[in-house]
Amino acid sequence: MTHPSQYFLGADIGGTKTHVLIADETGRAVGFGEAGPGNPEMVGYDGMAAILRTAGEQALSYLGGSFDLIAGAGFGIAGFDWPSQRADTLGAIRSLGFTCPIEIVNDALPGVLAGSADGWGVAVVSGTGCNCWGWDRTRQRVGRVTGGGIDMGEGAGASELTFEAVRAVARAWTKRSPATALTDAFIAHTGAINHADLLEGLMGGRYDIRSSAAPLIFRVAAGGDPVAVELIRWAGRELGELANAVIRQLEFEALAFDVVLLGSMFDGSLQLIETMRQAIHTVAPQARLVRLTVPPVVGAVLLGMEQAGVQPTPEIRQNLTASAREARNNHNNH
Image (tube, rainbow, N blue to C red):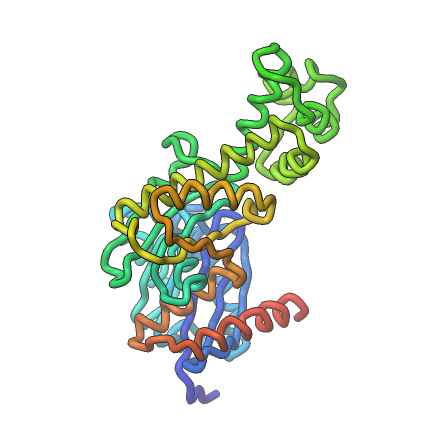
């Protein structure tokens, strides 16, 4: 089979799933693949390579080619946080047969490429966990937080929100804090008998309230429960402070730029985003909060194009955004 076009690959390698998208030089998506979690901190470098191979070969199947067909590739990788990880991460990717120029970044940064029309700014991720990275206009300076979550004093993803909500329910039982509708919501969620049984079961391991319970907290807050409302505001302030840390590192305070919001937490409540906006505007009044509406893997493809010397035009970006959805739908219906 002949391939007159150049093809570029992007991969979004996450803690819950991995997406691979392939597009040509016009931005037309020509293949999509999906597999399980590939975060090397969770599955190891061999596991990451295996997941990437699975998703990549699905995407390549639409072309009938192999990884040596790719002219440039970009990878956003959850868990890729430190320079010491670079050699092993690149080695695992190269083992699949890539011969093209490639770049690897933390999985937050493709969100900047995909969500900001200028290709620079700050990305705040809040899904199961949370993270924040940013690029300056030259793409030579990077700002970031540790990505270590609650252990490093960084919130708030769904895990941290549910952690704080359970603490609020415990404080309500001991009369340290006001009663909250979260108690009845968590009793129903776990099947506990009553408030005391809920707490005993949580402490003893019979019950478990995980990050998947975050939408329940948003629903209780929407019903007006003051404790749940304050938890959402807390999360907004925390996420705003993550952004502010990166803004200060990159000296963006006086600039107009995009703060791209990625992750399921931002679907939960406008109050979360508004509280976050207020926190950010105390430091950077011209910052624009932008909800990412395309898959982050689109940004990884744009990164891959740049590795091959192709500078994506607005038309290419528009084509890629539109066709990426179609490629994913075709894959899901295949």
